[in-house]
Length: 325
Image 1 (spheres, rainbow, N blue to C red):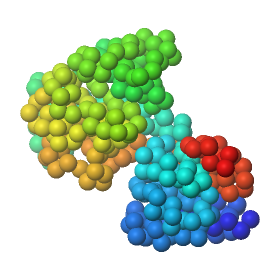
Image 2: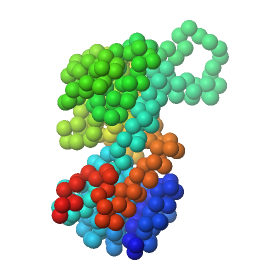
Image 3: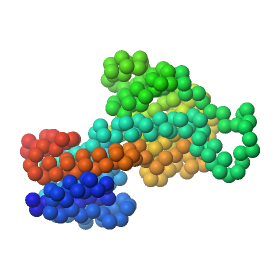
Image 4: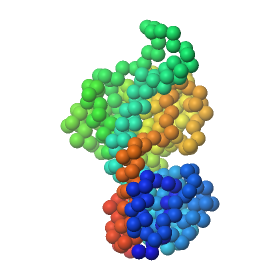
């Protein structure tokens, strides 16, 4: 057995139990915070494997510090925090946790959609402040959801799940994606359109693209001008997909009606302009934050790591070419 692994932040116990069963040394960051880069470089030394989080920047410098490591198992579906080519070059496997957080994250998108449209966060604050003096015909008017148009930007697993959940609200669904999604078209009558058309026609724009150079600031000043003044933007993908300064300006000027965000461009920092606005609902990256989902992510990441150390092919390997070396 004899394996030595490091976990960069505490995860649900079932995941740690898997590692303890398979490894001789399992060391976990004792503090409930992100490690500094200096701490990370020190802690990965001499490890056979590392279980890391999306908040950890895993680059060539980290891989070189972890000389001899066989795997970095990411506790996330996305892996834009990891320099995968640098890992592949060094023969280090990278794994992720796909599929398991699809429903939880799509549910979060809907939670933000409802909260922005019906102004629940804003009205909660108003009520707690003792300002509620009785029903009024103009009090906190919001957007209609039933029979409105939902625009899905990125129709992968999560985008598809969000769209499917719109059926109960009799929504028209548009989607913008490089690939045709016949499943979505068949099940909800979705129509594939280009991004500009989607932005012009949708009442709710929900973003579900991975972060890549071509999706950075995919939604910015130009795109907000295309959207309806009554439209809402929802982002549960990655923060840099949206230009936050442009979003704050669009919300402040009334160019769009509202936004619900679970991710941020410079996380954990939030654009100051957004913090001042009541028509922005801001959640602290809770997309996968259910007990069952986070536990499944832990066991999946741990199982990926253990499989690699035992000479097996990890179930969710991102760079399978390293197995051929």
